[in-house]
Image (cartoon, rainbow, N blue to C red; front, side, top):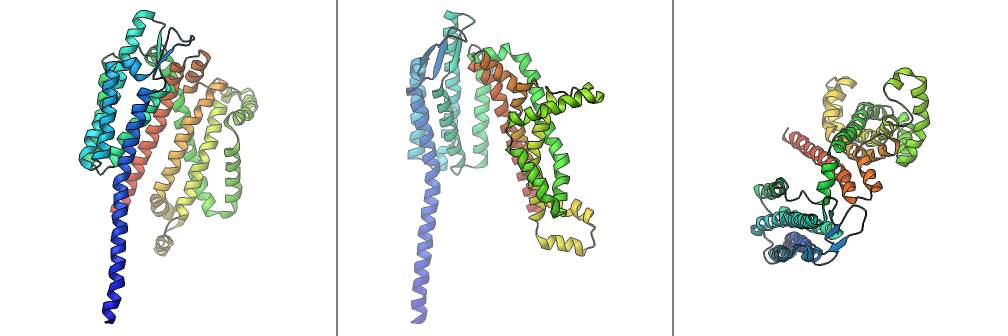
Length: 413
């Protein structure tokens, strides 16, 4: 009897855990469907409401704002139908068997939207001439958010790896096909890109110099500094305090403080002046970005070494390893993913922060962006902003991938 009475609560507990697990799995299955339906609803509403395209005779004059249906006509209705189909598939068939169809429909919607926008721009330019500008309105960017949600839902809805790779690959191929077909050549951003191509190439090079150079300098200085902070705890407070103060300064104010310093150095030290060190230009911006990048690298280096299993360190000491050998063979290799995460933060931060160089004649993509603001051309602003976003995303994705590979290699060992 006792065993029977004891088994009953155990069976009830097992049943409760099973029901809880079922609810959890059901919630996990429902989440991608909800995300997909939300994305499809945003895309459909973006076509119906708000300015999707803006038609302007030139950069300066305010133009005519059109919804997606007004701008695209019959194609707009087909796109609306495609959005409804994506939402229906996500709602009715949220399982993995519909993820590929939803992802490919999203790729088709994006390609069709861009193609229809290019056709509308060509038709408008035929009547207005080469100064005409066809620009995207805020509804277009809402539809991009909807597409992102659709693709995200399709990728997380239990789809196998090959499907998750096929969907973005198809999207890139569709965009490349539309771009190389010449259908986008009369869009405002394409016209501004054609006019600013030489300037853009030069400023991208300058922007990469700031982002990569500051991050490399932060690694060279920050990793040894982080090791020193971990080894000698008494210097950690002053070092991290100084780096925290550097983080508090607004970028432009920080550059302004550096300008008289580097102006005096450039005038007083001839070799530095020959390298272009002056109160304006690249030098103050580079140093400010370097100071900003040092904090995450130093902080993560200290955290990486301290987070190691003490038993591993004790084993290395017991084997007779010297502190330098222990650092080179045990601590840094095991802490490398954490240090790499700090480098990723520093690189993305430097990529975004390099726009301040434009204020002091240092160039970079910020110069293109602010030139667009001066010319009241939002398309030219986007020509400067889009590469910054693309570079930051590429750096972040690439280093995250490297972190995953390093973590997987450590797990395999």
